[in-house]
Image: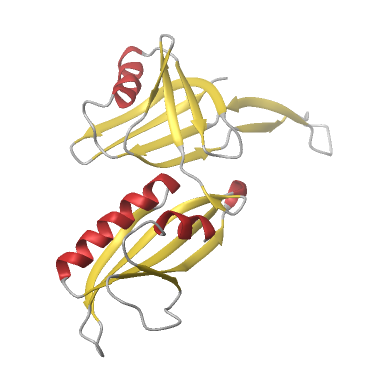
Length: 222
C-alpha cells in the first residue's frame, strides 16, 4: 500500500487511504485494499479499490485516467469501473477496481520478452502469464507373479507457459511469437518481474491473434 500511496501522491488532488480522516477539498482520491489472496506457486494476488470524487463528472473522469496511468507501472490493471454519486453530498464519484500480482509484498509488473537474433523484443499489451507444470508419469511394471507394485519412470511432459495480451498487430514481440508458431522454430523467452529473471526456450504450440485478443502457449523445452 505504501507503493500505491507513493504512485498516487503526485496527482493534483487530496489523497487518503480507506476513508478521509477529515473534510477534504475536491477533487480527491481514496484507495483501499479490496482483496488479498495467496495462490499456488507462491503467487499473491491483490485487488485495489479506488474512488475519485469531484464536483464535475469530467473532473472525476480525468482524475481516474491519471490514476490509471500512475498505477500501470506497478502492474496494477484496471478490471472494472462505475459512475456513482454520493447520496449525502451529490458529489460525483467514480469507483475503480484494480488487480495485480505481489512479490514479497510489493506490486510487481510482469514483462515478457522474446529473442529475435541478438535483440530482445518486449511483448506489448501483456496482462496475464501462467505456468502449467511439467509431469512425469510412473508406470507399474511388476510381473504378474509380483505381489507389490514396481514403478518405473515414464515419459516426461514439459511445462507450458501461457501468454495473454491485448491485440497489437504491429507489436514486434507479438509478431516474433507468431513467426515462431508459423515456422516451428524454437523461441527464446525471458520473464522479468517474478522472484528472479527467468530465461528459457520453447516451442509455440498454439496461437490466437485476433481483433479481440492475443494468446499463445509455449512448450518449455529447456
